[in-house]
Structure formats: structure tokens, C-alpha cells
Image: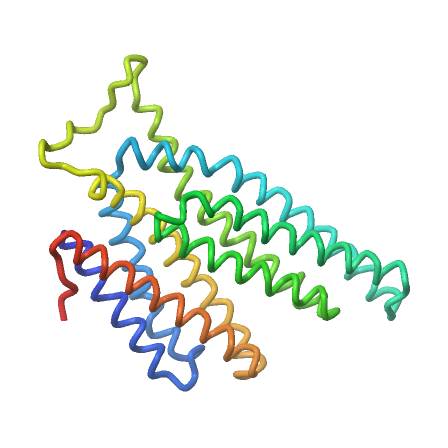
Length: 269
């Protein structure tokens, strides 16, 4: 439990640093190492607690997420091509506007598809947290397309959606790959559960695996916002995105704290 407790303490420290910062992008440089340490600590504990239940759920989610990733990549590439045509023409003609509206509809449809995929497993609060952050970024992409801010969609929001999907698919994929440890008779290399083990405790490995993915997503997004802030200053749009990320980080900390409570642990000061 030591790694888990330290992850909570590090996460709390990072969240408090961001809340106090008037220039979040500058503060990010001070907490980047802390966030990397949180990711390692969550990964360490998740590996220790990985179970067959977690592997099966990861295997069930992966096909839908991989398909969503393929569809998002196609929308991004189509958006990139439209941006090149629009910049070459120097104006929006009717055909370009129709294409832009079609892309907005497709992006909105992908958001709805993600929400349908996540709905049956929202009892796993870490998955709900990951899906909410991903859906928010997808809605930003759709809004940018709807407001003709195609450059922003192509260079900021759509790549962030792909990156979040890649991180989530990666950590779930590593959980699912452990199915190879299962023999033909259904036995696994995992130690047998203790007699007093219960289903809520067996789910902790998956929850931590996904929390680690969410933390990595937040970290990477903060890195991108810090770079944009360094170039353009703290615009109202960037402040809004920083606030969303700070809220997501706080929600992650709250969820980890609740897990601690269920396990009889507390975050050290």
C-alpha cells in the first residue's frame, strides 16, 4: 500500500500547486516530475492487483475503443485535408462549408458512440472519469468545427482525442494481454484469492490501471497547454481548459481518496 499512499500524496501536492498558480503553464514545469512519479506509483500497484476480472473487462472494451480510434483518425485526416484546401482557396465556399458541417456531425457522432460504449461500465468510476475527459475533448473538437475554427480542431483538439485514446487503449491492452497467462484448463498464474477476498477488492487493480491512464492523459494535456500558454499567453480559452484539467485532477484525487477509504488507508500529509 506504500506506493498507493505515496501516489495519493504526490497527486494532492500537484493539485494544490495548480490551484494556487496564477500562471498554470509556468507552474506545470514544477509539478511535471511529480506527475510522472504518480504514474509510476499507480502502475506499480495496479500490476500487483491485476486480476482475471480486470482482464476480461479490458478485453471487452478494447475492440470498441480501437474502432473509435480508427474512426477518429479518419475524421482528423479528413479535417486536415479540408484545412489544406480551405487555406489554398483563401475562403469558405459552399462545398467546403458542407464538408465542414459533415465533419462536425461525424465528430459529434463519435462522442455519442464513446458515451454509449462507456455507459454499461460506468460503475467503474475510473472508466467513467476517463470517458468524461475524453468526451469533453471530443466536444471541443466538434465545437471548433461548428464555429469554423478548423485550424484549432486539426492541431489541438483532434490530436488530443487521439492521444487520450492511445493512452487508454495502451493500458487496457496491457491488462488484456495478460490473458495469455491463462491455460486451457482456465487456470492462471495468479495466486489464489484469500478466503476473505471480495469482488470490490478484486476490481481495484482495474480501477488503478485506468486511473494511471487518466493521470497520464492529464499530464500530457497540461504539457500541451503549457506550451500554448508560453506562446500565446493565458487567453480566456486556455484558462477555461486549465480549469477543466484542474477539475479533472481534483476528481481523480477524490476517487483515489475514496478507494483509500474503502481499503482502510489514508493519504499521508
